[in-house]
Length: 434
Ligand code: DSN
Image (cartoon, rainbow, N blue to C red; front, side, top):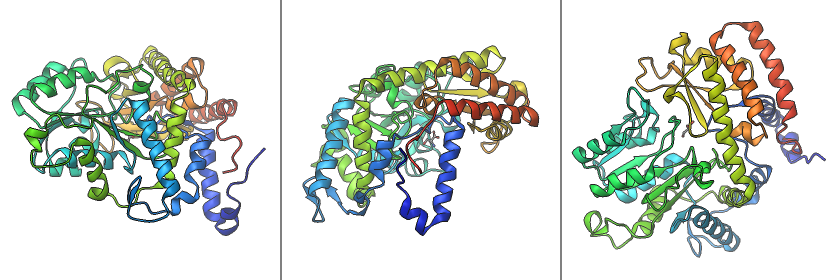
């Protein structure tokens, strides 16, 4: 039975209601393969569209600046408790609005402006907030980049160690947005501890794989962990910070502070960089965490990885070069230089066939970031729809044909028809009349 959740919206603002419907249909009909996108469950969507959006609750549970927070306190506390349990963390702050905010808050809690930090270069797979010069991170802090080896396209931990010993940063940031391999948190922690540096693991992309034990868990190695909640977690657009309670370098770097690491993180979130938390989003994060505690979540994460590997095999067999020759996680980075196609041309042609991927720089790319030489593909959203190895072989072959021949309109049209047939067999948001 369809539930018309948008009756009032349709009556009052049919223009916006219609556009929301069109966007939902686009997501239903197409193959969402941008690795940072996913389908939040209907339960998560429902928690977001609620009266909780009306409330102000600056502060933390039982310590608010506004009255009327009896139920909000319970919701935020549930979200905190579930986060700590799931991530095996000593402390959790569930108020950050986004991954970028979360990283900013961690830097503020641990560093001073001008401090040295090591992060993965954006052009080699890192995130904007890992020190890009156009981002606050690269402007406020002195970021020293590390990247991948030119031959293997993998992070070389000996090189990371050499840079760390030479530069002596106060923090090392691990994690990336376009690195198809696993991060060795234990090895990063060993290096960080050699030079008395904090280790921040930004696990936003592959968080689900860590929780499922498919990838190394960041605790106890990292001091602080940040994650977004909408990628492999399938939650709302938001983030969480997890950390140890005590600061192993309190005496060295924060001897004048009466606050431990957990308290400094909380203060950096509120009042440091945010005002009122988004209580409807915190409720949705709590729902997401409950979903992640179910056995199906582990199976889902394992399937994301299996699907990525089959997609990689299929593309490789059809002559497409993959950065690092494969994947360990949920994403693949295609090097389009050998087939003389640009990332934009490939992504535009795929979009016409209702296959959504994103153009992306590849390591040592000479092309501009606006028209880079790579294409990034991911499997989380397809896996949420129930697609498995069989579908990945099919989809891989469609993608391969289109990226090799992006101007072939009849191929694109034929593929679009097949995409529509396939997505009908794997419906999403069936019961919602969005
Ligand atoms: N913009 C996100 C991504 O697409 O990977 C990272 O924040």
